Length: 129
Image (cartoon, rainbow, N blue to C red; front, top):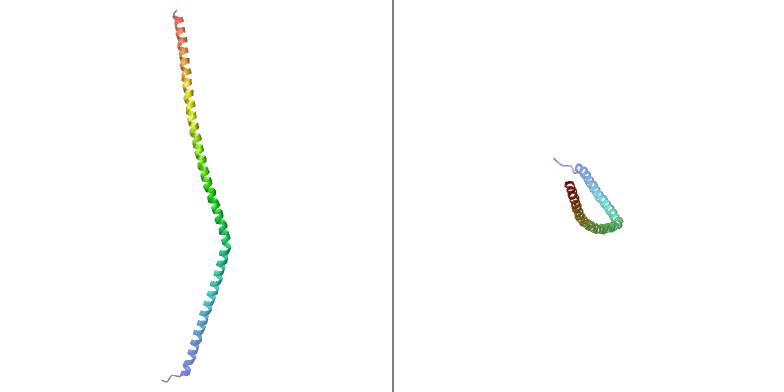
């Protein structure tokens, strides 16, 4: 069977045109992807440039907060030590006062018992006499 070259050329031209069209679509997609990538990267660089001063300010604020926190911690420790020392001194003073009052009350009670004993002794003698 003889093959007619003319009958094969039309499908070949259609396949060639389809392949060229596919190549053009692929090239267009690649160019579009590159343009989108370039725009996104430019946007990212712009955002980084804008946020850098803000980040520097935030870092400075955080440094200030850290130093203030350290100072507050030191002062809190000092106040705690002062309060603990004061409470210890108050406890010591209260113990001394209690001991002194107890001693004096015991002395007064002893004197009162002695006076009572003398009075009772005198009353008891007078009632026997």
